Every structure is written in structure tokens, then in C-alpha cells.
Length: 407
Ligand SMILES: Cc1ncc(COP(=O)(O)O)c(C=O)c1O
Image (cartoon, rainbow, N blue to C red):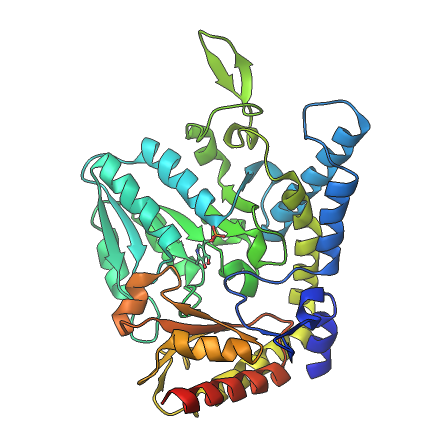
């Protein structure tokens, strides 16, 4: 099994480098994943050959760029089970959520209505809704999570009866790594007359997503967390909602007819894609998501990933004074956030960095959920299928060494 992860790892050149003379152990995947050869090659192709703007010209380079760009959209659509014209390119999850918070709220909210999020949301799925509430005179409701990071579904159901028009919830939370029961959340929201936006930034990496089966109204994710470059994100939206929504930005490519008296907008998805998009990064979604799908379908690789996760959980459990709220939660996937009595997480991470180990510390753009547990921030180690059990051992040695120096 360990060989399977080690073989998969060979696709990612950055993982074979040394830092400070030590082999790199990259456990900051929830922030951004590493890029495989096939994506690097596509980036080179988009820069070195098919370098042109899309949609506008009839020359060869423009046709090539447009075709590769469109293949990126089709790959994103197929990956989540949606038609290609319900896939809107954005710069990332944050931009996708802001688009909905700006445009959908304009058609759905009246004074006194409610928007509902959970206590464990990333700032990207919190601040845009606060901003929308301030504009529309609406109130933000927050569903608490239990001690182990699971949503308090009983409270959620009660809150829905309170004039909630929109629910915005993470598929998988970025601090505690807990996969939320989306079907239950979505069905209950629909019964209460609310639409649901799913923040899939983490969930897209660790779960198979079928938006039609989930019946979510919007689903957002970022390419860079799933092997593609930064600067490309995807917003899926149900056609009937996208058609009712006003455009987000005005400019080239999003129009049908333009005159000084009146402008009409283009069809989906162009209506929401004003200006030149990140063409090269969009094209890279095709090889990135192809590899991601192969990884999902490789039972041996998935088993290796589960075994690595299990080993990490067991090992962390042996550290005295370590608190990881979701450690034993069966819904946790690939992410470990914890704090250790008497040690500042950033001090420990700096020592670990010199030993070649990359982790994230602080509030991880989710300050409310971190402060629910501790005031000094946490350390987060997040795994991908290319991480190995050997790396877990190196990580643990580095952590123990840091603790010895700091306690
Ligand atoms: C759950 C979650 N939502 C949203 C985001 C924001 O993603 P991006 O910075 O790619 O827009 C992140 C990034 O870490 C995340 O983990």
C-alpha cells in the first residue's frame, strides 16, 4: 500500500525537493495542493504555444486556446456531474461565494429574512454573508457545532423555521476536517423554502461530488486545492437560479447586444464571466481533475490514504497535552487541527520547518471556530493521497523534537 502512495507521489516534482537539506514533508495541503507534471505541462503549453485570448478571434492560436479552455470547463462539469453551461469560472471559492452573496441575495432577500451559516465556516463563507446582511437588512443565523466538530442538526432544523432564505455551509470544514451531512442539510433547507450554497473548497478533495444527486443550488470550489494552479475556481449553480440572477460584473464577453440605450446579456455561463479569465489555469483543470478522478477510483491508493490517516491519528493520540477536537470523529477526513498545552503552535511550526516539515498554524481563516476551543490558534496538518506513512513518522519526530525544545 505504501508503494501506491509513493508511486502516485512521483507525479509531483515539488515533493522530491529538499528544504534546509531535509526531504520535504508537505502537510499543508488544505491551504494549497502540489501540482502534478500533467498540470505543469499544460501550463507550459498555454504559455509557450496556445497563448491567445479565447472566444474572440478566428486565428489558429485563439481557436486552440478556446478549445483547451472549454475542455477545462467540461472537465469541471463532468467532475461534479453538472452540465457545462451551469459551470461559471471564477478566481476561486472566495470569488464564487461572493458572486452568489452579491447577485443571488439581490433577488431572494427581503428585510427581516435570514441567512444561515455554521459556526465552523471559513471566512470566505462568513464575511460575504455579513456584507450581504448589511446591504439587505437581514440577519445572520449561526448553527453551532458540537465538541467534535459535527453540526448540531437539531438546532439547525429549529433555526430553519425562522425565515431562512439561504443556507451556506461547508462540504468539509477546513479546520476540523469534518464532512457535513449535506443531503440531510439540503433536504431540510429545501423543505423550509431555503436554497443551499455548498462551500466545496475542502470537500471536493476528499469526497466524490454529484451536484444533481445532492440537489444543492450552488457548489463552489478552487482549482488549487485539487492539483490545478491558483487563480481558477468553479461556481456551479442551478440554471433556473443563474438565469434569474443579475450579472456580477459588466464588461467584455458577458454581453449579447450593447448600445448606449440598452445592453442585453449573454447566455450562461458567459453572463457571469466578464473580461479575460485565467485561461491557462482553466485549461489546467482538465489534467488536474483527470488525475484526481483516477486517484479517487484507485481503491489501493484510497486504502493507503486511509491507513496514513489512521496512523497519524494514533500517533497524535500519544502526545501528552495534545487536543484535537475531531480526532475520533468518523466524519473527519485527512485534516488534523490541534493545540498542545504550554506550546505556541507557530513556535513549534518554525522548528518543524527547519526539519523539512510544512504545516499551517494560526486561525486558518476560520477565527470563530478556532476561538471556540483555544485563543492561541492551532496547528494543522492536512494530507493528500501522495502523503506516505513514512512522512507521518518524520512529522511525528519533528513535532516531538519541537515540543522537547519548547516545553
Ligand atoms: C472551506 C474553505 N472555504 C473557502 C476557502 C477559500 O478558498 P480560496 O482562497 O481558494 O478562494 C478555503 C481555503 O482554504 C477553504 O478551506
